[in-house]
Length: 308
View 1 (spheres, one colour):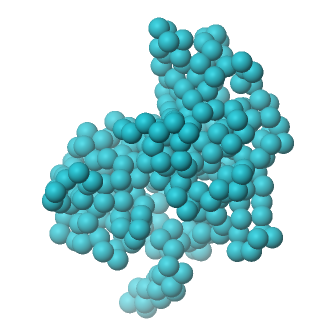
View 2 (cartoon, rainbow, N blue to C red):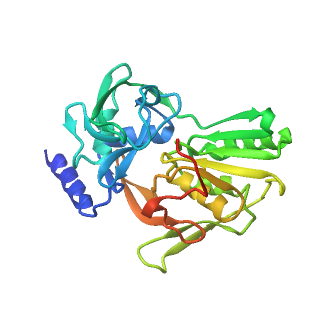
View 3 (cartoon, rainbow, N blue to C red):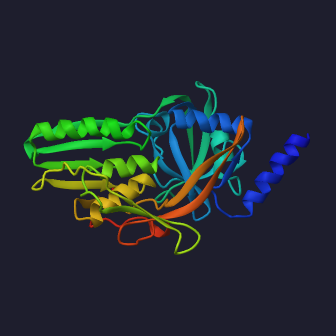
């Protein structure tokens, strides 16, 4: 149809930018995208991206079919059922992985340490994205906040967890960002503002030219106790907004970065509504840490490296 030709032309034009995160959503894909933003959808519960032009698992989400099936951050997906992922694109891959709850999808993966590709069968479910939970280790006087994503609700839920920590009186806080694939920039800046003094840089957003710079700073108030100790735990499933928050806490000398090298997803996307049922997600800038480290280049290197 003429509509299909127009949609195809738009996708072809965007493909010329050679950016996996700049994407056009026709009606069917736009519906899936909007359900993901809403935080509930039918699927298996993984965040995927491209690493060295290969479809890669950023992280399986907590308590989802993907996690229970044993998928791991860093797994390279070379086929979805019978479809090769070579030149498939992230959003087409998501469309194939998603499906009605109760149905199954087979992912062929390549994993470091395996001598041959492995087929993982996963049964789809209705996925509700987790956000925050807490636990304590009284024997070590440690309070732990697990943050699973940066949604619109994350700042308020994190604030509740932080108040719980402050009421505990524990001198040690561990912020667990392992497997957190990111989300909204505003959520990362809001959460960072409770740890970093007002006016200090959290992240720099640099566009096409060196002069096209937006500096996002802490709005305060810094409520983290002066003598308290903070460890930020990351791994190769920590991406995007996770890297923004972890980089700011580390470089502003608030917390110690511990774990594995992070994923390295440091590009900024804006969503443009084209019609009532189509939209465009386009990369407009890249993120840099307060000290000018490009998150996209190689991610963050922990001060203390501890492999999974």
